[in-house]
Length: 124
Figure 1 (spheres, rainbow, N blue to C red):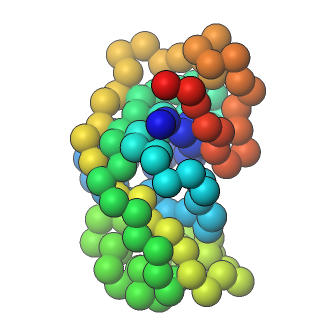
Figure 2: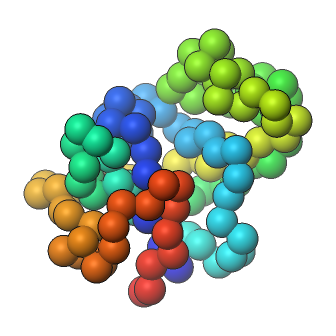
C-alpha cells in the first residue's frame, strides 16, 4: 500500500538528491502494510514530485532517535528538537529506493485528493 505524505519542499529536494535518508514524523500511519511513500511537496511547490520505498521505520525515544539518525537526517539538531517538542518518542522512516517524477503531478488530478495535512492512504 502507498501513502501520500506532505513534505516541505526543501526536505523533498534532499530526499531525491539522496542526502536525506530519514523522514521524521511525530505520528505515523496505523496500517502496517504501507510499503511506499508518495511525496507531495507542500507549497509553494504544491505537487507530487516522486515516491520512495520504506526500508524501515524506527520508533524510539526522541533523543535516541536523533543519535541513531542524525548523520543522514537532512535536518539540523535545532529543527529536529523543535519539531519533536513536547514528544517523548518519534518516528524515522528510512528511505529506500527513490524515484523522482519527471513531471510533477497534482494530487487532485492523480488521486482525486486535496493535499493532506499529514498523510493520506492511497489505493493500489
